Length: 394
Ligand SMILES: Nc1ncnc2c1ncn2[C@@H]1O[C@H](COP(=O)(O)OP(=O)(O)O)[C@@H](O)[C@H]1O
Ligand SMILES: [Mg+2]
Image (cartoon, rainbow, N blue to C red; front, side, top):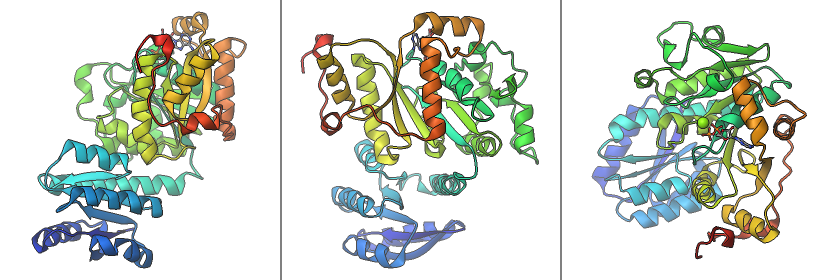
């Protein structure tokens, strides 16, 4: 189905005509009207477009505040923002305010098809969410935090609720097969997207079984192999996988500029952001959550603390205030089990501290419970303070 599109443009006639032509050139876009910024709200209300394209020139700041205002009034709509040049500050702000894409005049002709496709996939995933399985993306902005350990062990515990799989999208340095002591014959780089029957059976054949309930799609074994996997293909894989498996866990790379990672975050039903209660990890987590929360609802974006240990109550509450987002789950530090599971290629057993915590995380995700640990005051804090324990000045 076509995406009905409203163009908001206060730039000159030439610019307006260029963008209208661009929209007409896309088979999946249908232009319903072009309006000025001052008329946008009213026209959205009467024309009900799915996509609103805001051209930022001649006054980009005004354009961005219009984006903020419209997004608040119409949170279900998709927004494209365009401008003459790819100004980094404008791009950052537009994404933070919830734009789906930023198109600059130098590249919009080439970038537009992918931008439209990404919205269509989002729409599709929203409509099949009820029927299909759940895609759970695991992401940590800091290395060595335990994202891969959580991804594999959570998958193991979720597989009790339905057949599950792990897609190792840490394409360069994927460890999932090593952590589970598997020796995959195929990997993500083996996939042939020109295969006429790219379906669940084909996907399953490329997976390696851990047991009857858990399979993995391994990262490519060689660095050279990762170049030709595109974002749209990753979405195709996840799309197919969620029709076949109850839970599809994805171990993401650290690099958020990777379009495959962004495509996964968009399509995922849950994004688990993993951090620790330490200063550097909190800083990174805060940075990424501040951006993510403009795009994803609170029941999609789940903050998980790994390796938690006893902290004085004031330090703990300062850590939580700095994160400025409700903590969904805490996984205690359990070095003995964490090491054992990797050495043995096993899932953390339910009687261990690590296993118990992952079992209860799996239970909550499977049951959809949304018990949040953080207090109201913590949620309200809006600036970053460094806990005294880390010895840094505010
Ligand atoms: N809850 C935990 N308690 C103790 N050690 C842990 C815990 N979770 C992970 N680890 C250890 O942390 C190290 C890094 O884990 P890994 O999953 O590879 O991190 P990442 O994928 O974020 O780089 C591993 O040695 C792992 O055993
Ligand atoms: Mg990892």
